[in-house]
Length: 349
Image (cartoon, rainbow, N blue to C red; front, top):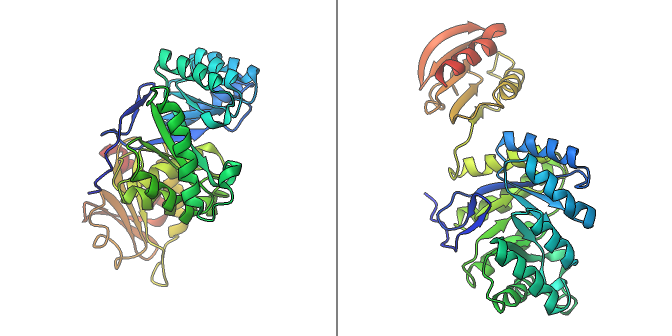
């Protein structure tokens, strides 16, 4: 069992981050915030997939004002992502944003920071601050130790808020390089007790981005570091949510929906495992109950290696043995395997 780092608990709407709260899964809308209908449609799909916090970009006042309409039509907390313009942060907060993503050191005059803090205090809205490796302040760019520079930049932002008696803070320290990200978070974990938002920024496309994100996020979570995650992919935000939950399920930090175990196949396999697994995966997407399903190519890797699965298939010659909790249940012809397996899964849930 993973022993998680003790942190302050922050609430984003009805979702707690840090403390003893489960590690939450976030994503970011990838359509223009000013297109309210498109944003709401995308968020509703993500809600159904289990997304717990959603972030939207706020590039201008029209986008900041659109938050009011978006909030009325969604269920999950909304984060307003703002750069530099403090007026956008204030407007987004007044329009119902549940959290602000803005770095106080980038706003300018201290009175502008105070204005944002005042509205955040008034509405009990947390602020997510931090540093990305690619956007460090000019005075820190010369530091060769990038993780150290990232931490120094974030600490500077934190100090600004703490001096205003504001501690409703979540921290992120992201880089596109996995090792840089790991070092930055581990260094910061020794210095503060604020909850951490984890992610590998600009990780890449679906395949490469999933691998980098899984390696980086899972390594930190295994060390007990991390309270909410966003898998940043150049892909659908739905993929981000799915990958996020797979990471958490692999570490037994969350239970959500089915876990599919599939053998890689070999020369012993006499049924089309790839096709069967793909069909089953597509059909179980909407199942909410945790259930472990095994698709195994032969009796060698059948009920024995997958005996902890709730239900599964062990392939034979143009047929398959359906087993439950490691015990044989029935033999089924290959063409009826998927239908029969899904029928039995539905009975179990």
